[in-house]
Length: 123
Image (tube, rainbow, N blue to C red; front, side, top):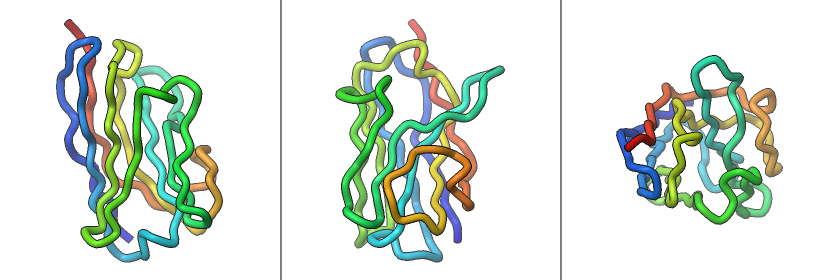
């Protein structure tokens, strides 16, 4: 199982970025996959996930309405479209998967992690 996140960078407040996560070694359309982030000095926290059971996307309150998660099964890639970015979105963003199939956005339920990609929101 491998996951590789990319697409981070510098954005201005109110701007947008799209992260990608290329995956291999498991079936994307039947596995739950999530996005997480970790800001300096803080614990890793969930952002969103797509459930392997029902294919629905779930979001934490802080990003709901601003972030959109999607997946391209044919290309084994998951995306996180981030709009209306705020300085507090600054963090290293990770994608992860595991044996769970339900839509849970808690890091302890995930077993396989990609390397992170840095997102910085600043003017």
